[in-house]
Every structure is written in structure tokens, then in C-alpha cells.
Length: 183
Image (cartoon, rainbow, N blue to C red; front, side):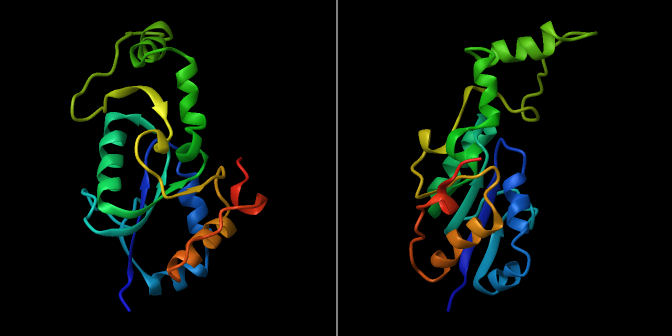
């Protein structure tokens, strides 16, 4: 049997979802027998997202141009895309900056000019500091999502209950408090 080509991606978020993924403990050993991890910030040092990924968990919201570009690439190259955690599902905490200003420029002005103690200046380093999007958005506002897995972060039990059916060729049942509770 061919292994499932599996990936995880981290956009604008705290990495708590990935930490919860690592809380799968012994199930990670079982998972390693069934999947080939082809891209992940916790397991790989790859610079480019690969082709033909079967399942990808995407943590975080879209806050900058790099996030947007990667999300489009991930969607294009992935069969089953899972919105992984509250930031991916709703934009959650990263989207709090949307309340500060109607624009990315307003957010940058507030953080780097208005609140600066000394030497007020905006960061500008093309190719190094990614350009902010005008607003932070959840994944489904940009690309089609196949499965939503809320939680801040989702518990290891929820992650396992989502992945196990997929490994058996079935669709997980995302219903009930244990599977869809936010927070």
C-alpha cells in the first residue's frame, strides 16, 4: 500500500496547532507507518511545497503576501485541504489587527511610527519582510477548504479523530462538541 503524502503548513498563527499535533504522542509512530511527511515546519526543512500532496493541515490565517502565495500553492498541489485550528477557520487572534485600522498602512503606522519611542520608521525590506495584506482573513475566504477542524488549538484527540478516518479512506465526521467546538 502506498503511503499518504502528508503535509502541514504554518501561516499567521502561534504554532499551537502544531504543538497539539505533537501531543499525538504514540499515535505519531503509527502515523509514520501510514504517511510520508513531505512538508512540515516541524519535520522538514524544505523551501518549496511539493506536488501531489494527499492531505495537508494548514494552521494560521492569511496576514501577508507570503501567506497568500503559499496558500494558493498548497491548494493547487493538495487533494484534501484541512483548515487546522481557529486561526485558519476564523482568522481568530491574528485578525485582531483588522480592528486597529482599515488598512495595512494604518496598522504599520500605529505600530512603527505612532508608538515608537525612538527612531520611528516602517520596516521595509523587500524579499525579507513580507508585505501585509489589507486585512487578515481565514483560509476559506481565499481557497476552497475540504475539512474544517476548529480549536485553539484542536486537541490531540480531535486531530486523531480527524486523521484516522482519512487514513482508512473515509471522511471524518465533523459533528458534536468534541469535534467542532471553538476555543
